[in-house]
Amino acid sequence: MDAIVTAGGIPKPEEPLFEYTQGKSKALLDVAGKPMIQWVLDALCAADTIDKIIIMGLPDDGSLNCSKIAHYMPNQGSMLENIRAGILQLKQIKPAAQHALIVSSDIPTITSAMVDWVVDTCMQTDQDVYYNLIQRDVMEKRFPGSKRTYTHLKDVEVCGGDMNVIRTMTVTSDDNFFERLISARKSVFKQASLIGYGTLILFLLRQLTLEDAIQRVAKRLNLTGRAIICPFAEVGMDVDKPFQLELVRKDLAARSAA
Image (cartoon, rainbow, N blue to C red; front, top):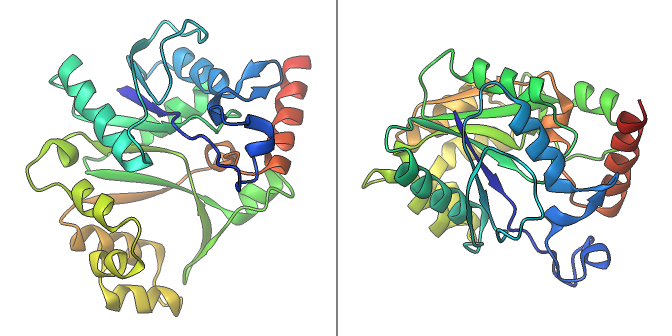
């Protein structure tokens, strides 16, 4: 499988990480002696399941090291637009590509074994979208004090992962859901209309199980989907705030020392 790494985020002055980035890319923040994205690339480069890598949002300036990098593309303005542009570029490079691994550049504690687990587990079935979720107890045991945002469902409490798989055809088809997601991204009412108001109400009342939620949303978007309970907290340990940056710096410094 091929990977698309999203690295277009540049914190704004009002955002928590701006004092660290000062108008530069979050992906290039120093984490234990390396740019944060380099840790992600190290994991992807060492993973047996990954072939080519496309980096979204950074220039090809020679600062990153990974033999699997096939292309760099400029930031397209939003996460969804970066994913879409990355998949379209992948299809130019490899027209036969059926699925792509979407990886955020701000999960530096992942390892190659975790990448392989995600790809192998997803490919046990044939779906349009695979979404990794981490249970609260798993996250808090591995990263105490990480203060993730959790979704409360009827049967489980989870946070989202930042390494997921999507079928390339969902982007390249004429009637793809990416167009609808992009147009709805700034309107809660448009987002609610995508998943259905009945589903939204059941979610707010915590009357949906995880499987119910996935199947309802997938059916509404005319997709097939699968939620995967990921055993690796690292897949959801993204860096959005200064204390999370310091947390992963300490964690990876300890890994390097070991």
